[in-house]
Structures are given as C-alpha cells and as structure tokens.
Image 1 (cartoon, rainbow, N blue to C red):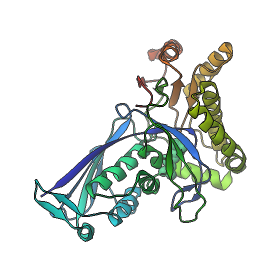
Image 2 (cartoon, rainbow, N blue to C red; image 1 turned 90 degrees about the vertical axis):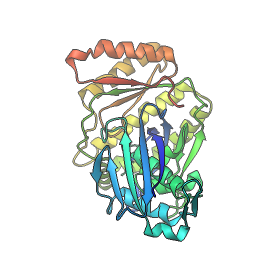
Image 3 (cartoon, protein in one colour; image 1 turned 120 degrees about the vertical axis):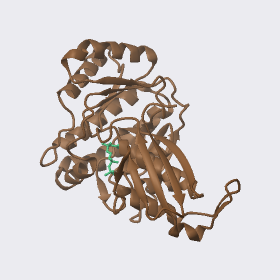
Length: 349
Ligand code: DP6
C-alpha cells in the first residue's frame, strides 16, 4: 500500500526583511520580520508526500530532479515532524499506522515550484513550508500553526512565515532553544484586498550568493547590520504593524521601500560586498521614486529580496495598471532583460 498527501503553499515577500542569524543551527534571526503571503495561484510550491512499507529509504525530488536529503534542510524538518507523528487510520484502504511505527517507514517527496528557484523569489520559503505542512497532514501531526512555523523555520528562516496567509510577523524570540521564535498572523488574507502585487522578473538566473551564506558574511563583517537589527528594525516593525492594521498605504510604502534599501545597504556594507540588484533593478527603483515624488505621496512600493527581481506593491488596480504601462514603456521587451510581469489580480488571497 501507499498513503499520500498533497499540499500547496504560496511564497511570501518580506516588507521588513530578515537578514542575519544569531543561531545558525536553529535558524534564529537577529530581528523580527514582516511579510505578505502571496496568492497560491501565482507563486507557490506543490508537494506530494507518500509513505509505503515498500520504500527502502527516504527520497526527494525537486522540480523533477532527485536531491539528496541527508544532512539538508529538509532532513531536519522531516525529523521534527516524525517525532510528532500520531496514529493514522485510512478505513477505505484498510491502512493503520501506529505512531511508534512511523520511525520504521520511509517517505518519498516530490515538490514543484511554479516560479524560478533561487532567483530571489523566496522559493525555499514556499517549498519548506509546504513540505512541513503536507508531511504534518500525512503523519496526522496535531501541532498548531505556531509550532509548525517553528519547524519550517529550521528548514529555512523565511519559510516559517509561509505557514499563514495574509500579513505575517516572524517574532525573533529570546530563548536560546528557539521555542519562542515563531510566526504569527497579523491580519488574514481578506484584510487588505485592494493591494496588487506585481513581480517584474528581471532575471530568472540562479543567484550567485545564497541568502544563507550572504547573511552569514553580513553578520560577521557589517557594522550596519548590528545597528539595523538593534536600533532601526524594532521601531520599524511597530510602525509597519500599525500601517497594516489601519491599511495606511503611504506609511506601508515608505517603510517597505526604506527597509528594502537598508537591507541592500547592509549587503554593500558586507565584506566582500554582495550585489543582489542589477542595473535594471536600480532603474525600476528610480522610476518608482520619481513617480512617487511627482505625486507627492507613494503610488507604488518596491522591495527586492536576495536577487534582482522587483516586487512592486500597488494600493489598487488603477495604480497597478499605470505601473504596468510605465514598465512596458521604459523597459520595452526588445532592449532589456526584463522578461515578464507576473500579475496577481489580488495580492493576497
Ligand atoms: C532576503 O530564509 O532564504 O528573502 O534562513 O538561510 O534559509 P535561510 O535564509 P532565507 O533568507 C531570506 C532572506 C530575504 C529576506 C526575507 O525573506 O525576510
């Protein structure tokens, strides 16, 4: 027999960035972060997990290619979920698995992303959140979303925020064992329905410096990172929570852009410096800044993760349409590397 479960998790985009760990093994961050979870139809991971007594070992395929599970991020999540597995009964198939038997059974996992992997679009976030959630379902794990988020965190920090929809805060926590470093939902997916998120895929190439090694270098060498984590982010997080609660786009946009720029400043302050954005990214920032300045109030917010792709957030469909027109005018398809625009008709569903 084979027992299977399939799940889908959207990726999330940080508007207050996580950059830097205080504990590498447990993945504990140096500051809180806040994100928006996207609509699963646009950028998501789909994972199928299967268990069978005839599987001789644990195996995993990512986008159709087998990857090694041993010692990797998926392995630690698998171990944590297995520890919490409960009795499972499938009457139709006549399957009964006792919780103590899960340790003897092996799993096969197949995961697909519907967007470029490792191009700074937080693909690991969606993949690991999906993996933890779906495996939890298969093994009848009873833990709540907070606990699942802390397991996903141990696979990839940003993954803990993809356990929820809407707006999510990853509380850095204080405990050395990481027990209070969990994600909480600030507002659900219906709270700010007018927002539209457009992702300008500047490049779908794999990034040169992974987030994991980039942030390690920043922690070791950037004085700006310490200042950011201790002085800037705590205040910014409070303001961002308020802006989200009151749907104040002006404040939301200013904080989002400022935080993206400071994260990339920390990357530049790292030795050797890390360049995630390219010329096209910089031109997109100028375009948005000029537009916002000419109107006297933010029309669109931008944010960039560990890659050159722009995530642009408009307060409504009108501004999203204007933005697309501007992008197409300034970046005509024939003379640049801007490949496509992924448009979510509702940012957060
Ligand atoms: C720039 O979560 O990919 O996207 O914890 O080492 O797996 P690891 O890093 P990861 O870093 C994401 C960094 C970021 C900002 C963010 O998502 O908050």
